[in-house]
Image (tube, rainbow, N blue to C red; front, side):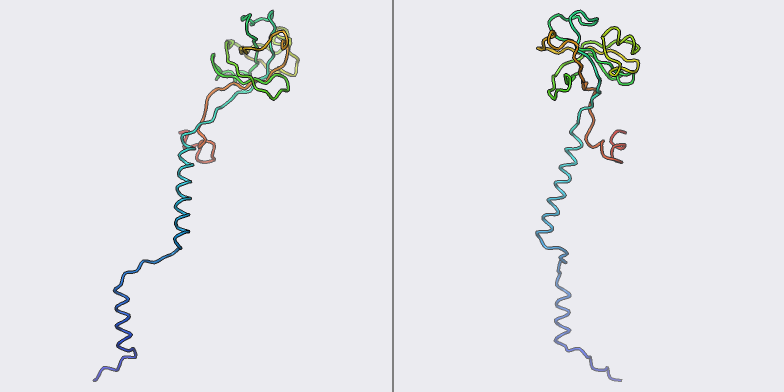
Length: 187
């Protein structure tokens, strides 16, 4: 029985086999798009490395008052001293020598100072009011008194002024602030 004639032309079959032997790479995206995606991946990796290495400071905020020369705790006659009132849980991280950024009253200006003394025990709000003359709104819980030294500030002008201080207690990585990733980084 003879083989039936092929419905394909011999020339078409040769062309098909020739194309099949040739290796071709498939192109899913044009070159500019591929290049931009690689650049974007590089930027993401760079930002990740920066977020891993860079740290931001952690502050404890506390109200306080600038002491006059005769106030208890005002041991230094040349520099102005302020007393900060921290709740017991906040004061656990405060150490002598730490940086404090102070705002006097409602001023936007920040003055750099440092912690010079941390009292060992908490005192009652009534005792704070008696010793330092602080109004009831400033201190409402038992507090630990922290003294900070503010250089180049005239005591006579600012004595009795209310202050708000941010005491730097440490730092943490930027990456630890991201939800989910933060628990992995801290571990």
